[in-house]
Amino acid sequence: MSFRSKALWAFGVSYLVSTAILMVYLMYTATVNLPSLPDDRSIYWWRDASYGRYILRHTCNETDVVCDTCCYCYTPASHIMADFGDLSEATLTERHCEKRLPQAIIIGAMKSGTYALRTYLSYHPDIAMAYDEPWFWNKPEEFEQGLERYRKMMHYSTPRQVTIEKTPDYYHGEGVPERIIQNLPDVKILMIMKDPVKRAISHYNFERLRTQDFYFPATFEEAVMTADGYVNVHSEYLIQSAYSVFVKRWLRHFPPGRFLAIDGDPFQRDPVPQLQRIEKYLGIRPFFTKDIFVKNSTSGFWCLTKPIYSCVPQSRPHPPHPKVSDSVLMTLYRYFRPLNKQLAKLLEEPSFEWFSY
Ligand SMILES: Nc1ncnc2c1ncn2[C@@H]1O[C@H](COP(=O)(O)OS(=O)(=O)O)[C@@H](OP(=O)(O)O)[C@H]1O
Image (cartoon, rainbow, N blue to C red; front, side, top):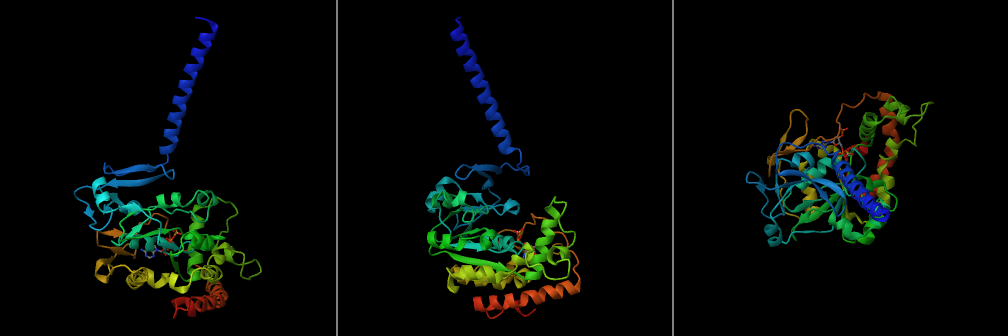
């Protein structure tokens, strides 16, 4: 063998070996972080190539509850991610199932109850809920790729269903309302908000549990008050609870008929009246009634019993909130009073519970 052919052979072999190593590495890194699943072959991780993420999928089986007017069946796996199993290709075609751009978007400050709202609504037969939070309109690397990419992030829907996505962070994203209205001129916004002080405590509690930061404030008081006892107006927990500041931006682009505000406090105690309001607002058939909900005695939250028994997955930590001193609570309620007044005026709502606190 000449030197030239030896070199070519060596090059060829090393090329094949390195390609094989790269393939193995890519397959490994693509799956290594996926949580293991129950031993049920109808549930599997599926890489949605159109947006490069893994999502949970399930094929429908005989024991699942098939939705007669949708593009999916309800499987117990929806407890994991509130996702749904897929029907057969033939049924999808027969029902005109396609991925459609959303007609409504759920937004809200962190810890306002957005996940619960999304979960309940996802069981309404006239709603097709996106499986994941798209984080599309607040990320240039996403929206610069165009609407087609966004559409692919939605769930399959029939023509009579309303497609909805939830990305809480749109709520405070710079330029987000403008971007949405320019691209989806008929879309409706659903915003859930709860008592701003309770929300701030919940937000702090959540961050406290996931932070590794050595300098993270040891108490809620430290996080929201200055050393000399004033309200720290730069605290992220308080900024996100200043709803009127952000709602004003949304209402510049979305008139009241296209922006529905939901009070998260009564929603948590009894979701039905708010869900019925949403049905009317979206113009969909009535589905939610008191008799299809039962209260879970452990979590204290409401679970749906129809179309299948389903509780809001507590996928995030839900630890008890820290005790906050009465004087700090009073100071914070006083701080939020004018902001809440502004919000009441903006929303033209009769009243939210915490407007009078
Ligand atoms: N089933 C049900 N119904 C109504 N409300 C519920 C429900 N489950 C949770 N919660 C409340 O929602 C809070 C979490 O809000 P989010 O889902 O918006 O949180 S997150 O930002 O997505 O992590 C959560 O906050 P924490 O109490 O601090 O955990 C609860 O107040």
